[in-house]
Length: 260
Length: 270
Image (cartoon, rainbow over all chains, first blue to last red; front, side, top):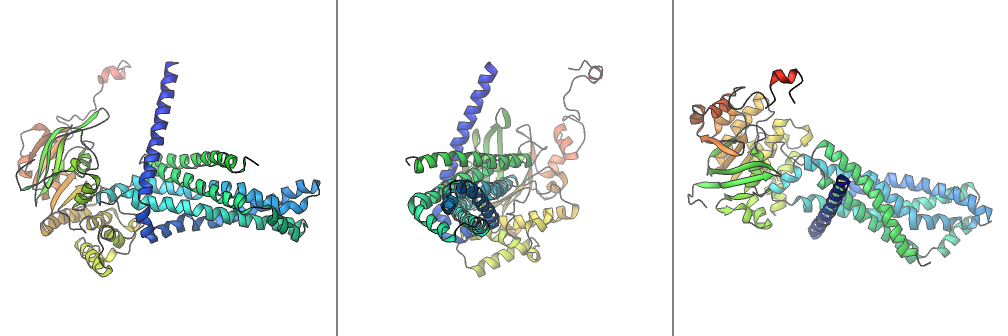
């Protein structure tokens, strides 16, 4: 019994300490923002490796998700004779939920894990320490551009995901299942609201961008500098990101769409 | 604070612990300007930790480290970074940035700390690369370098801002005889040609003794011997003799402390 309490206390203390470290770390990362914006090339290089290289994964996944939505939506809607509303259903699901959430989960798996591993290995091979001794703050020089790149890439990738997804739904619904093309688009346009749906979706993906990239860079920087430590940090990065994205999605959805 | 202008780095009554483990217990050391001073001792005695304490990456639990007359641990972070621009450090792994080629690695401190035109950066980088014999390897990535070349590239980077001192962390470990010879020669020649002060942490007795002007031997958190290499070679202390001559047994026992062998074999050791 006493042992259990001791363990519980230790785990709680460790968690609180880690959260504290993560918050201080985020402040440190953000303090380098201005310097990185002035050295734009550092940011674009990271946007390439974090964002551009994720495009194929995001686009292909978006296409398939949209196609599945088209199929499933058609099955349900046609029972009620409402298959003309397929366009709204596909677009609303993507823009409000699946676009931001699935993009964030895929991003955590592809770019987040790579960030954690890269930073963890830089720590393990003394590259970060070496920078410190060269009087260069490794957090501002290495982490800040990666963090900003992740935060900026996420809404762009989520938008791409939703766009390609709508096209996927269109191919299946209109191309294969014979939904009226005009109804597909006009219903979508009349029922989707720019502010309520699209902007809220973008806000969601911005929040996910912060959360996922923050977890990824922090886990890398906080990793025990051995091969085992880096591998564990990479796993943690993906797992925590998934939990955080799904948890925050509930909170944000409740705040944004709760009153309807 | 030492009054002697001749001393660049001075460590006084320095203690450092990690958890319950005492790494240093009241260490005093002086490093003279223009000299190569070696810190030697068995693996795991915290030699690297000492360099990190001098470089301000770690804080001592007690005592001070002065570099060029200033107490490293009393500085603000920005003052510390200013001081570090005048201190070069060569890490055991080289610590080259793996996403940059050799040229860009050497240019890195210049790009971060100066606003020199590209043509000037090029000249400075090529001069330093020439000094370590790697001018022809400027386009290679760190992954394409041998261990010895990586260390030489890192050395070029460490001296590119023309520091007052360079700290070498185990520069000879894991090197083949030729690379070892090259590094030994480079450390001594760069020290004399550039008017540096060098601190070499190592446990390679012969290589270090060949270039060091003065040697400190540390073990179990204390300085157990010091002097010029010849003095230490002739030392009467059995520990110093064992270390300098590399004898397998002596005051540092071959056997890790254990229960009686006979009883252990019969199953009563525990």
